[in-house]
Length: 160
Image 1 (cartoon, helix red, strand yellow):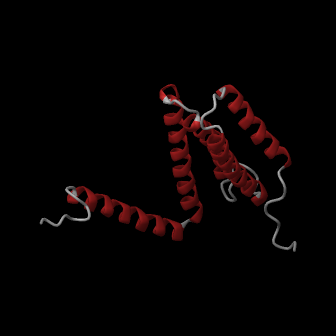
Image 2 (image 1 turned 30 degrees about the vertical axis):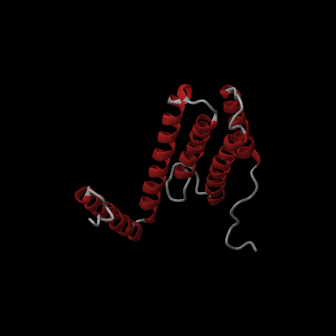
Image 3 (image 1 turned 180 degrees about the vertical axis):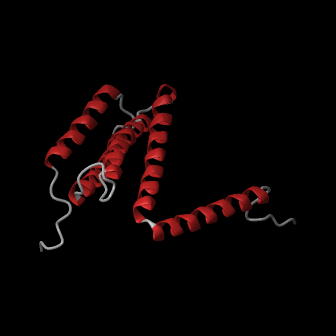
């Protein structure tokens, strides 16, 4: 009886990937120590890239889907990435928006709300026929309603 490796046939590929992942983690740690603003911008940029990629793939394959699960998730991630971009640009020290920790935190929370609402809507409408234009309108209205009247998410240090 032949005993196989835990990596299977592709030992070289697995070791190569493990090397690059370890190197990326070490570089991220060093960058995080030197400049947290740069680390945060790189991390947010990566999450924005992933969420835009998810939405592009989902929206380009919706005609092949028999249900509305994947397209709704794609729409949710598209709108979530918009708020992630505003969150990354409004982070304290970026210099694009006035330094406002409340706005930064609100944008991050709104983005997470849109992602979770998209997942919930996708699961609830799994076998139903959904008009995707209405789904776009729904996410536009939800995102716009949060931006104007979102509750205080970050209090100044001297307020208890």
